[in-house]
Amino acid sequence: MPGCYAATKLAPAMDLRLSRCLGAERPAKRSPRGTQPPTHSRFMMVAEGRRTMAATYKMAAYPKEISFRDGSTVIVRPLEPGDADGLLDFFLSIPEEDRFFLKDDVTSPALIREWTQHLNFDRALPLVALGNGRIVAEGVLVRRRGNARSHIAQIRITVTPDWRNRGLGSAMMRELCDIAAGAELDAVHLEVVEDCESAAVEAAGAIGFVRLGRIEGGAHDQQGHLHDIVLLAMPLHKYYEWSKY
Image 1: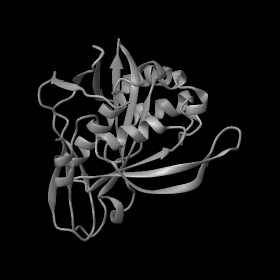
Image 2 (image 1 turned 90 degrees about the horizontal axis):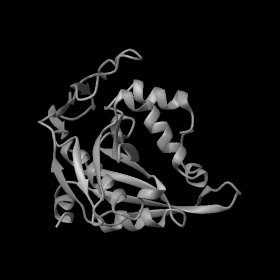
Image 3 (image 1 turned 30 degrees about the horizontal axis):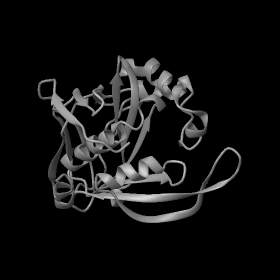
Image 4 (image 1 turned 180 degrees about the horizontal axis):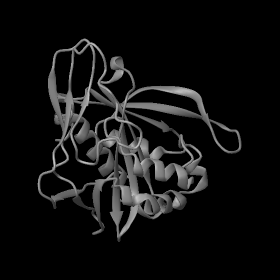
Protein backbone atom coordinates (compact mmCIF):
# COMPACT_ATOMS: atom_id res chain seq x y z
CA MET A 1 0.00 0.00 0.00
CA PRO A 2 2.85 2.52 0.47
CA GLY A 3 3.14 5.08 -2.30
CA CYS A 4 3.11 8.72 -3.22
CA TYR A 5 -0.05 10.54 -4.23
CA ALA A 6 -1.10 13.98 -5.30
CA ALA A 7 -4.35 15.67 -4.27
CA THR A 8 -6.39 18.16 -6.28
CA LYS A 9 -9.22 20.23 -4.81
CA LEU A 10 -12.45 19.76 -6.76
CA ALA A 11 -15.17 21.45 -4.73
CA PRO A 12 -15.87 24.78 -3.00
CA ALA A 13 -15.30 25.07 0.72
CA MET A 14 -17.49 22.87 2.90
CA ASP A 15 -16.17 23.21 6.44
CA LEU A 16 -17.77 20.89 8.96
CA ARG A 17 -17.72 22.61 12.32
CA LEU A 18 -17.17 20.57 15.45
CA SER A 19 -17.83 22.84 18.42
CA ARG A 20 -16.79 21.46 21.78
CA CYS A 21 -18.75 22.98 24.67
CA LEU A 22 -15.96 22.18 27.06
CA GLY A 23 -16.43 22.54 30.76
CA ALA A 24 -20.21 22.07 30.59
CA GLU A 25 -21.92 20.34 33.50
CA ARG A 26 -23.64 17.69 31.42
CA PRO A 27 -23.40 16.33 27.86
CA ALA A 28 -25.38 17.96 25.10
CA LYS A 29 -28.57 16.12 24.18
CA ARG A 30 -28.20 13.66 21.31
CA SER A 31 -30.52 13.95 18.34
CA PRO A 32 -33.39 11.42 18.27
CA ARG A 33 -32.65 8.24 16.33
CA GLY A 34 -32.88 8.91 12.62
CA THR A 35 -32.46 12.68 13.00
CA GLN A 36 -28.70 12.97 13.40
CA PRO A 37 -27.09 16.04 11.87
CA PRO A 38 -26.78 15.72 8.06
CA THR A 39 -23.52 15.50 6.18
CA HIS A 40 -21.46 18.71 6.34
CA SER A 41 -23.65 20.15 9.12
CA ARG A 42 -22.75 21.70 12.45
CA PHE A 43 -23.10 19.85 15.72
CA MET A 44 -22.05 20.07 19.37
CA MET A 45 -19.91 17.84 21.54
CA VAL A 46 -19.19 18.04 25.27
CA ALA A 47 -15.96 17.15 27.09
CA GLU A 48 -16.22 17.84 30.80
CA GLY A 49 -13.45 19.54 32.74
CA ARG A 50 -11.82 21.61 29.97
CA ARG A 51 -12.24 25.18 28.88
CA THR A 52 -14.48 26.10 25.95
CA MET A 53 -12.81 25.98 22.54
CA ALA A 54 -13.74 25.34 18.91
CA ALA A 55 -12.35 22.80 16.47
CA THR A 56 -13.05 22.25 12.79
CA TYR A 57 -13.26 19.10 10.72
CA LYS A 58 -11.47 20.25 7.59
CA MET A 59 -13.86 19.02 4.92
CA ALA A 60 -13.24 21.85 2.45
CA ALA A 61 -11.04 19.65 0.26
CA TYR A 62 -13.75 17.08 -0.49
CA PRO A 63 -14.50 15.66 -2.94
CA LYS A 64 -10.80 15.30 -3.75
CA GLU A 65 -9.03 13.61 -6.63
CA ILE A 66 -5.99 11.51 -5.68
CA SER A 67 -3.53 10.28 -8.31
CA PHE A 68 -1.07 7.39 -8.08
CA ARG A 69 2.19 6.48 -9.76
CA ASP A 70 0.54 4.00 -12.14
CA GLY A 71 -1.69 6.76 -13.52
CA SER A 72 -4.86 5.63 -11.78
CA THR A 73 -7.02 8.11 -9.87
CA VAL A 74 -9.76 7.99 -7.26
CA ILE A 75 -12.23 10.50 -5.88
CA VAL A 76 -12.32 10.64 -2.07
CA ARG A 77 -15.36 12.05 -0.30
CA PRO A 78 -17.47 11.49 2.82
CA LEU A 79 -19.96 8.63 2.80
CA GLU A 80 -23.45 9.69 1.65
CA PRO A 81 -26.95 8.26 2.24
CA GLY A 82 -27.14 7.11 -1.40
CA ASP A 83 -24.02 4.92 -1.06
CA ALA A 84 -25.75 1.88 0.51
CA ASP A 85 -25.71 -0.36 -2.57
CA GLY A 86 -22.21 0.64 -3.60
CA LEU A 87 -20.84 0.14 -0.09
CA LEU A 88 -22.41 -3.31 0.19
CA ASP A 89 -20.97 -4.31 -3.20
CA PHE A 90 -17.59 -3.04 -2.03
CA PHE A 91 -17.55 -5.15 1.14
CA LEU A 92 -18.75 -8.20 -0.79
CA SER A 93 -15.66 -7.78 -3.01
CA ILE A 94 -13.37 -8.13 0.02
CA PRO A 95 -12.14 -11.72 0.47
CA GLU A 96 -13.99 -13.59 3.20
CA GLU A 97 -10.77 -14.25 5.12
CA ASP A 98 -10.14 -10.48 5.25
CA ARG A 99 -13.72 -9.61 6.25
CA PHE A 100 -13.44 -12.07 9.13
CA PHE A 101 -11.15 -9.66 11.00
CA LEU A 102 -13.61 -6.75 10.76
CA LYS A 103 -15.69 -6.01 13.85
CA ASP A 104 -19.06 -5.92 12.06
CA ASP A 105 -20.93 -8.12 9.60
CA VAL A 106 -20.38 -5.87 6.61
CA THR A 107 -22.26 -8.27 4.31
CA SER A 108 -25.55 -7.39 6.06
CA PRO A 109 -27.70 -5.07 3.89
CA ALA A 110 -29.54 -3.94 7.04
CA LEU A 111 -26.29 -2.88 8.72
CA ILE A 112 -25.08 -1.02 5.63
CA ARG A 113 -28.41 0.81 5.38
CA GLU A 114 -28.12 1.73 9.06
CA TRP A 115 -24.65 3.17 8.47
CA THR A 116 -25.62 5.20 5.42
CA GLN A 117 -29.02 6.42 6.61
CA HIS A 118 -27.92 7.46 10.10
CA LEU A 119 -24.66 9.28 9.50
CA ASN A 120 -23.41 10.74 12.77
CA PHE A 121 -20.05 12.42 12.30
CA ASP A 122 -19.53 13.20 15.97
CA ARG A 123 -19.15 9.45 16.51
CA ALA A 124 -17.74 8.16 13.21
CA LEU A 125 -16.59 9.99 10.10
CA PRO A 126 -16.50 7.64 7.07
CA LEU A 127 -14.67 8.38 3.81
CA VAL A 128 -14.96 6.41 0.58
CA ALA A 129 -12.71 6.34 -2.48
CA LEU A 130 -14.33 5.89 -5.87
CA GLY A 131 -12.38 4.45 -8.82
CA ASN A 132 -14.06 4.05 -12.20
CA GLY A 133 -17.39 4.93 -10.63
CA ARG A 134 -17.39 2.33 -7.83
CA ILE A 135 -16.25 2.32 -4.21
CA VAL A 136 -12.76 0.81 -4.04
CA ALA A 137 -11.74 1.82 -0.50
CA GLU A 138 -13.43 2.79 2.74
CA GLY A 139 -11.98 4.38 5.84
CA VAL A 140 -13.51 5.62 9.05
CA LEU A 141 -12.35 7.90 11.85
CA VAL A 142 -14.02 6.83 15.11
CA ARG A 143 -13.96 9.05 18.18
CA ARG A 144 -13.27 7.27 21.45
CA ARG A 145 -16.28 7.02 23.75
CA GLY A 146 -16.29 8.90 27.03
CA ASN A 147 -14.88 12.30 27.88
CA ALA A 148 -11.61 10.85 29.19
CA ARG A 149 -10.74 9.40 25.74
CA SER A 150 -12.39 11.94 23.46
CA HIS A 151 -9.00 13.41 22.47
CA ILE A 152 -8.10 10.18 20.63
CA ALA A 153 -9.63 8.56 17.55
CA GLN A 154 -9.23 5.16 15.94
CA ILE A 155 -9.14 4.54 12.20
CA ARG A 156 -9.99 1.56 10.03
CA ILE A 157 -9.04 1.21 6.36
CA THR A 158 -10.34 -1.38 3.87
CA VAL A 159 -9.22 -1.58 0.23
CA THR A 160 -10.62 -3.85 -2.47
CA PRO A 161 -8.03 -6.39 -3.75
CA ASP A 162 -7.69 -4.98 -7.27
CA TRP A 163 -6.74 -1.56 -5.84
CA ARG A 164 -4.13 -2.71 -3.35
CA ASN A 165 -0.39 -2.01 -3.69
CA ARG A 166 -0.98 1.36 -5.38
CA GLY A 167 -0.71 3.63 -2.35
CA LEU A 168 -4.47 3.93 -1.80
CA GLY A 169 -4.34 2.58 1.75
CA SER A 170 -1.63 5.08 2.67
CA ALA A 171 -3.63 7.87 1.07
CA MET A 172 -6.76 7.03 3.04
CA MET A 173 -4.76 6.90 6.28
CA ARG A 174 -3.31 10.32 5.55
CA GLU A 175 -6.74 11.80 4.77
CA LEU A 176 -8.20 10.59 8.06
CA CYS A 177 -5.17 11.81 10.00
CA ASP A 178 -5.48 15.22 8.33
CA ILE A 179 -9.11 15.42 9.44
CA ALA A 180 -8.22 14.37 13.00
CA ALA A 181 -5.40 16.93 13.16
CA GLY A 182 -7.76 19.64 11.92
CA ALA A 183 -10.20 18.73 14.70
CA GLU A 184 -7.37 19.23 17.23
CA LEU A 185 -7.31 15.62 18.38
CA ASP A 186 -4.12 14.43 20.08
CA ALA A 187 -3.59 11.07 18.38
CA VAL A 188 -4.95 8.51 15.96
CA HIS A 189 -4.74 4.80 16.77
CA LEU A 190 -4.74 1.83 14.42
CA GLU A 191 -5.02 -1.88 15.24
CA VAL A 192 -3.65 -4.33 12.66
CA VAL A 193 -3.45 -8.14 12.54
CA GLU A 194 0.30 -8.26 12.06
CA ASP A 195 0.97 -11.22 9.78
CA CYS A 196 -2.29 -11.02 7.82
CA GLU A 197 -2.13 -7.26 7.24
CA SER A 198 1.60 -6.70 6.89
CA ALA A 199 1.05 -4.23 4.02
CA ALA A 200 -1.03 -2.04 6.34
CA VAL A 201 1.72 -2.13 8.98
CA GLU A 202 4.25 -1.05 6.35
CA ALA A 203 1.98 1.67 4.99
CA ALA A 204 1.30 3.08 8.45
CA GLY A 205 5.00 3.14 9.32
CA ALA A 206 5.81 4.89 6.06
CA ILE A 207 3.61 7.88 6.91
CA GLY A 208 4.76 8.19 10.52
CA PHE A 209 2.76 5.79 12.71
CA VAL A 210 4.74 4.42 15.65
CA ARG A 211 4.30 1.08 17.40
CA LEU A 212 2.76 1.15 20.84
CA GLY A 213 2.87 -2.59 21.45
CA ARG A 214 1.59 -6.00 20.52
CA ILE A 215 -1.25 -8.18 21.80
CA GLU A 216 -0.07 -11.76 21.43
CA GLY A 217 -2.83 -13.99 20.17
CA GLY A 218 -5.22 -11.05 20.08
CA ALA A 219 -7.15 -12.38 17.08
CA HIS A 220 -7.92 -15.74 15.52
CA ASP A 221 -8.73 -16.62 11.93
CA GLN A 222 -11.49 -18.81 10.52
CA GLN A 223 -9.47 -21.93 11.23
CA GLY A 224 -8.92 -20.92 14.85
CA HIS A 225 -5.23 -20.06 14.46
CA LEU A 226 -4.08 -17.23 16.71
CA HIS A 227 -2.52 -14.03 15.33
CA ASP A 228 -0.85 -11.07 17.03
CA ILE A 229 -2.39 -7.60 16.89
CA VAL A 230 -0.06 -4.62 16.52
CA LEU A 231 -1.11 -1.33 18.13
CA LEU A 232 0.02 1.73 16.15
CA ALA A 233 -0.36 5.42 16.88
CA MET A 234 0.02 8.66 14.98
CA PRO A 235 0.78 11.52 17.40
CA LEU A 236 -0.72 14.70 15.99
CA HIS A 237 0.18 18.38 16.47
CA LYS A 238 3.86 19.19 15.75
CA TYR A 239 4.95 15.57 15.23
CA TYR A 240 2.33 15.05 12.56
CA GLU A 241 3.33 18.22 10.72
CA TRP A 242 6.98 17.10 10.78
CA SER A 243 6.04 13.62 9.53
CA LYS A 244 4.79 15.10 6.25
CA TYR A 245 8.25 16.22 5.22
